[in-house]
Image: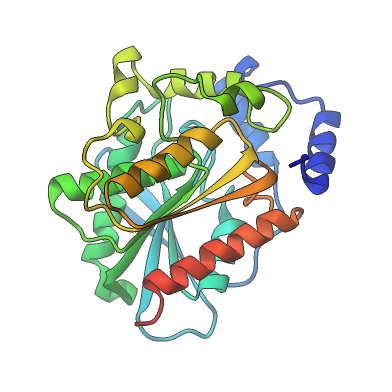
Length: 310
C-alpha cells in the first residue's frame, strides 16, 4: 500500500522542523525534544498518581479510570515507548486516557527507569515489580486480580513481552492478556526486509534503533538474552493471549509479526493486525491519524473482550 496520506502530511511537517536523527543527538537533548512534542490532550478520566517501592528505588505509576465508573475493573499495566531511553508518563498520557475511555478498563502507566543511566534489565525489573504491585493491591485499586493485562508500544511492548515471560518463570502473578503495539522483539540483528525498506523517512529510522540499542544494552552479549530479544525465547508456551498491532512503514514490522507467528506456533492465541500505510508510533498520533484512531479502537475492543466486565 502507498504511505497513508495523513502519515505523509505529518512526516512532511516533522521534516520541516529540521530535527536531526536521534542517532546524532545527545540523550538529554533527545529527551527534551521528545517531551516538547506534545499531542492534544486525551479525554477526561479519573486520574490518581501512586508511588511504590521498586527494585532500584521509588517508582511512579499513573492510574486512569473511566469517569463515573464504580465497581471492580479489569486493568492494563502499560509501559510507554521511547526506545528504552525516552518517554514518560506525560508523553503517553493521551494514549492511556483514550484506551481507558474506549475499553472501560483501568490503565496503570509505569514510569520505569530509562537507559543509559539504567541498563538492561533494570527497566524490565521495574515493569515486573509494578505488575506485581497492581496484583497485590488489586482490592485497594478496585481491580480484579484475575483480569490484569500487560501492554505497551515499541520498547514498552518489549517490556510487556518480558514481563509475560518473567511471570511464567517466577510463577506469578497471573496475567490475562498482552497488548503489544509495534513491539521491539529482536535486538540481535537489524537485517529484516522491513529494516531495509523503512531505514529512513518514516519517523523511526534504522540508525535510531542502533542508537537505542547501544544505550540500552551493556554489551553485545545482551542482544541474545531472551528478555531483550523475546523472538528468540524458547519459553513462549503458556503465555497469555495477545493482540499484536504492526505498521507497514516501520522497521520493527517484520520482527513483531514474526513474534506473532512464534506465539501461534507455541500454542498461544494471538491476533495480528497490520495497518497498511501506517508509520511507527501511529497510535500515539491518533489525534492526527484516522489509522491511529482505528487501531486504538481495535486495541480497546480487545481489552474489553479480554479483561472487561466479567
